[in-house]
Amino acid sequence: QVRLVESGGGLVQAGGSLRLSCTASGRIFSAYNMAWYRQPPGKQRELVAQITHRGSTEYADSVKGRFTISRDNAKATVSLQMNSLRPEDTAVYSCNAVTTAFGDYENYWGQGTQVTVSS
Image (cartoon, rainbow, N blue to C red; front, side, top):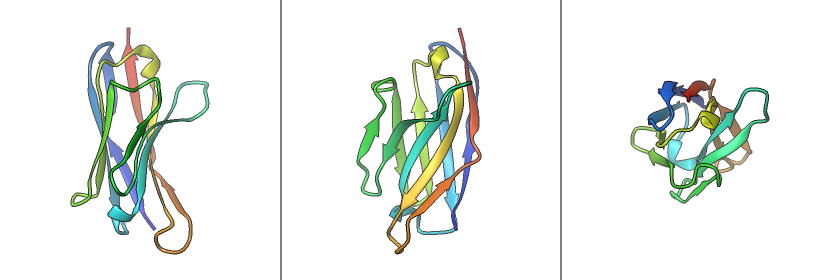
């Protein structure tokens, strides 16, 4: 079992920055592919950025050039640096961990953290 705890959300003005962090506990963090998802008000959850256990990254087109995902395996933490924030980035951001390294498919979610960008 893996527990994911997000932090760093809040209220920011358009053009500002926030850094989200997700700390994992319970299993070998380096074995997990990590991702950040978000769910805007009244909309479906969408993938924002992901980083594989080897460090390869991918981003949604809407955040490319503005957001950066990174991981620190020693601290069991994945972070999302969000710059040049826009009102449309307002959402609940959730951390996700996925692996098949231990035999079964494992998929874990954090509780989410609210990001609100004012215009």
